Image 1: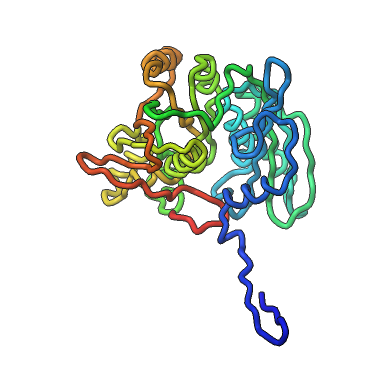
Image 2: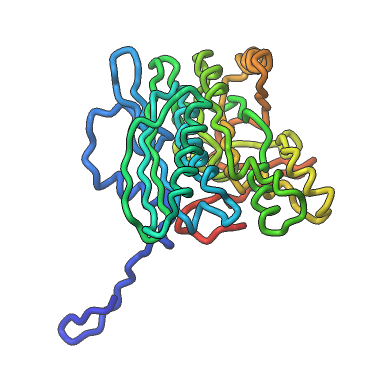
Length: 341
């Protein structure tokens, strides 16, 4: 922006969203908004509204054709996807879903068949996880843009916030990482059968795992891994004023990644496991004294909990690779920023 003052040329640089990135943009919005009585507001996976002995959980997520919908994605999968990513936020707080509302922004040339399949996919995901689509809106739009809002409930003493982790807590994830990244790579390069991309196109929200973890009442922080492990660790570090030390050899790698590695020997599979995101597993911190007990409980219920590192006092994020320790770069997904992948 250029302005003149008393005949003098002045130049002002106006920041764009590409300069800020999604998280600084959210911070800017939060600073402007007036604060209500909400118990947990902007900055966590869900807002938490005080309802006596419970919190009402509310979360919203939006997808658009350019940023979220590969050309190989079917209308059914688009519907499944929008519901799954909203339910993932409820899962990350240990909640039970109450229902969802969806808003469809669709071009007027959209076919009736597309709308039917989109709705069937959304309904299939909701009913798979014992909830329902209870309302929404439909409007004309230039490109496909779909927004979901999920509602859930959790007992106050079971709520798993992002803020609360302490030094020496165990850092753990609920399952294998890199499956979405492998699916994305395969869609672009067509190395293996398209089935390998199912985890990318039809993610599974970890509601069962979230409820099991919440029921133990000792998880100190939790968030889903939609943005990737490295990005999530940096977000938790900033919020909790702590650091992390992650052991690369402990990171559980998805079978999809390992299949790709056999065909593409020079593929750096840890880049996908650390940075790509889209796996919708849960990242948790748990006091060391409780970890083995909680791990055993989850395993008895058919799910994994894998320790990958620890929380540290120094506010730096380190990855151990054999005997070498180095700073883990923050290459996870962030809207408005140039992407690593």
